[in-house]
Image (cartoon, rainbow over all chains, first blue to last red; front, side):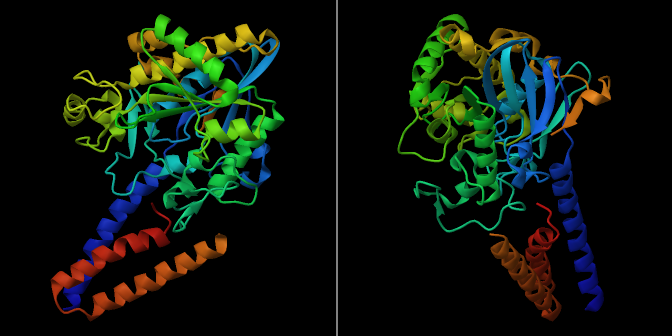
Length: 384
Length: 50
């Protein structure tokens, strides 16, 4: 009997090592970033709020400065890392954008902790690879919520600070339900506080939070805007819909739903807060196999069937929603928002070059805008 | 929160010990396998692997 117990224990140990090493690789996968020609310096989120310095959420902040003075814009990628078009768009900005006027701040991993775990029971792949001419770049899959290793346990009910609105328990680890954050709160709240401190200290004019949404969610293919940004969002929406080849809506940030960046950053800082949503079929509950292919192609026969039964808030057909389409939407939306803002506020203008538009991303692929870290100057490489 | 987190790790360790003790007491191989499968996530959490 002792021999049998030893044999079973050995088998369990093999399973534990197999699972544990997979989790370890996923959490520690290095994601290189080659700072582009516009990057003046790379700061850390902890520079604006020292309590998170050196921790898992001490994210890199890429600061791109133009030759001419102007306004300042902050783009957040990776608020929800399982929405890869947001992170990839931020990657493209950090590696390619060149400001002629004003400053661009880009965070690629706003909730870095959330990028180190996948959804419990979700059968997510641990990572995904974007094809490039030099082979491909692999990214951590990530989740919507901070990793429980970094913030645990969750309460029975999450009470948002400072409004005391009751939210779902797991959203205490959701960066986009914890704004404006607080200095002595949870890791997620402290990260939100650090982002708000950055906005206040750098006098950011516009904050743009990049997201993706399931097709069964009504807030999709849209710009969600705080009251301060509704004219800007409406004008950008009209221009994009008429000039870029894809429709995008503009919606008001609800005052009764708390903790979201478009609501709280607008309320608690001087910045105009906007949130962009692109369609991501991978997130839909009625999806089929939850693999890398679905994540990157956005093709799923079950979601197409749901669409035929009128259950979706966005169209889908056999072509799906490829990652290049989603990234292209974000790129063009950011460029149009900045163009509209700069025309309206010339003294606070932010003018960018080097960022591809929707049609270019679809034609060339997102990977063509990712730089090869093996051939880059090592001084320009940082890791997310 | 840090105190609560430490308490949760202590609870996890306690439950892992109880599961391991039950594994040793079992005489049926199917129950032994069951206890060890249940034990794995507790061990991984204690080792901070997620």
